[in-house]
Image (cartoon, rainbow, N blue to C red; front, side):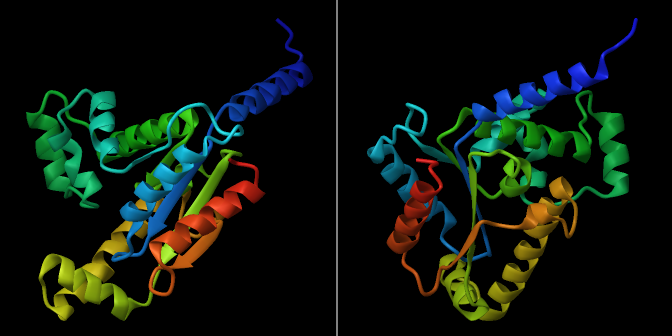
Length: 230
């Protein structure tokens, strides 16, 4: 059977364009440890819902983060506690992998777990009107045309003071915690897009020390309007 490759490629290209036209809008928020990502996501979702933009889908905006754990567990057919370590940016040792694969009927490798996370995030993003906090969202949804990617950052001293107050730990402990979580989050994103690639690029970064939550939310909304995402 002879295949018309030119026609085949054209059909696949049009199929991709058609699929992307229905994906999003989606916003991802990544942050350095200590920045108020969840508060910003909650306020942004509320204000975007109130706007009822004709350019977005006719459904309320929502923000998600921890919900991805339960959905990923459903996708894999396991209990959420079985894969929770991945969301804590932990890794199993080689010995743990061997013992788990031999002792658990529904054993899932780290690769299968992370691939399931990517699938869940992609499906949620495709539905539109969603804000994804962390979880490698920027890497997984970067190619969606109707997407916008935010990075929250702030000076280290400001962040460790917030961490120290929040968890009632010393400044030294807060510093160690900040470095550890920032490193693990970066590694988590690298898994999905590769280290040093353009997928690590964000559309905009905000200084959480000098800008209030209200100012950041309003700025995001204004940019979304300019880009005709809302």
